[in-house]
Image (cartoon, rainbow, N blue to C red; front, side, top):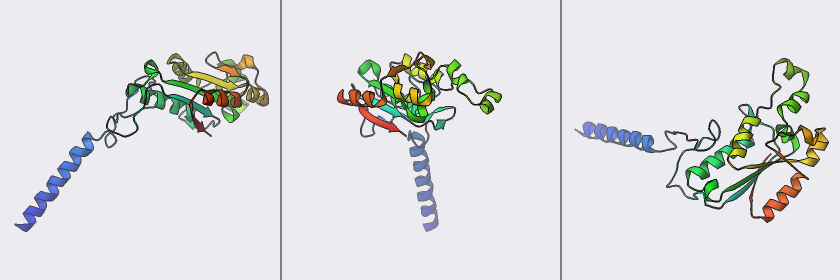
Length: 193
């Protein structure tokens, strides 16, 4: 009898845990992409603390060119943040603002397809990798209202002309001026190094 009660208790606990995990958005994630599809998937967590606030402003300072798939991780993270705020009702139509500044090793991501190909080494050209893999996602971010800047000083130091920059990107005097100006305008600073 004792064994049967123990067995039933274990069975009940297992069933309860399975149902709880099935209903837990992080235990059985169903990723959403309310604005930026294919990047920055999020799960809705309406009961979690620190919900996105309306009228938030964020500045992503991207210097790293490390990748998430074929795009720079910082761009994928930008998609995630934008998707997160939109899903929570605090997106661009509710005052959310996002800006991205590219510099350092991430500078090349600002180039047009033509300039990217021109500045790609022979090995990658032989493999057919001459298109800027970041431009499609950058176009989606810009269309959603994200401002994307590249440091003019970094362009010069890397040997890129301002005419090499893709249409989705604005040339800034420097990353420092973007960082200073936008932080003075109360943008939260998030570095991607």
